[in-house]
Length: 130
Length: 130
DNA sequence: CTCACAACTGGAGCGCGCTCCAGGTCAAGC
DNA sequence: GCTTGACCTGGAGCGCGCTCCAGTTGTGAG
Image (tube, rainbow over all chains, first blue to last red; front, side, top):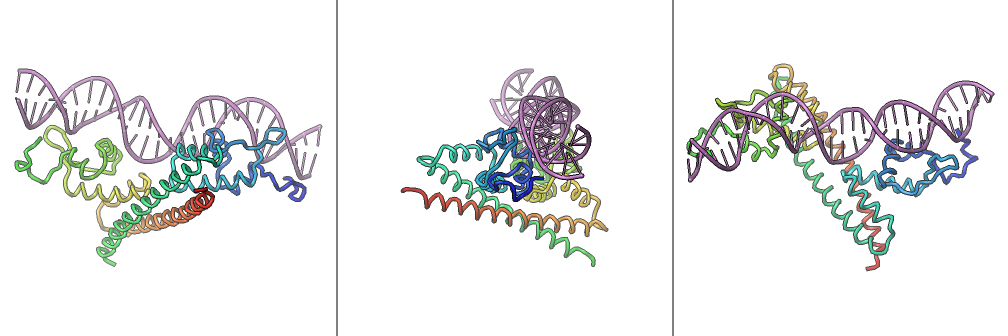
């Protein structure tokens, strides 16, 4: 282990990034391969070094992933985000807003089916002898 | 097409079942293969004939599927449901209640991440020139 | 120095839940 | 009788999102 105090706190090792992002190391490498994660720093020996910014980006990826955005669309978003603000901003907003409505729909479906589930449970309970 | 009036309304053809259940024919066959659907009736020539009861069961399967229950667990539920009421009832209730809490968690996660999503959108909007 | 363990790479493999295909049979309209 | 399209079966294939593997190199502790 590196002595904590002796390191610039600017870089995170893969292990630390795994811990803080909640993604597995394999997933981090996979995301880099497919272009969800770009320009990841390297130590002189070739080991990855993540920045706080990377971690923040991973937070966004987690948000999108947890809400069911397919990877192809995350890539589109990543590409827009990477190319910088100028005209891609409106596109990014549109993409996220569209995604927001799909999340809304997901929640609505889950809630509706949860109602059915609970009715079923109540029915079973009413039938139960005890 | 069969003339509607000439048929006992008790049986549904595969096509009708597809339409009413929302599952594809392939999925219906798949569900039968893996034991999610059992004792599906057959016409003399071997074509499937679904009953209203089958359709109701498909409704339950849809509910479970839409709420993300893995097929292995649906099978467990199907097995419990098939073996009849006596002592499996409590197990079924337990299974569904457990699933209900996972649905609750799913919704909570979605909602939380949706908040982040919306913050991001608001941030973009605040940055937008227009 | 040695050891153990972290990390590297390219590529194969996997689990899930279907979906598709080939090669046939069945049935209703003309 | 013929055609068309629904349906059958067993089995292969697929898309997604990772996950694992082999073989090698790096690194920090004792």
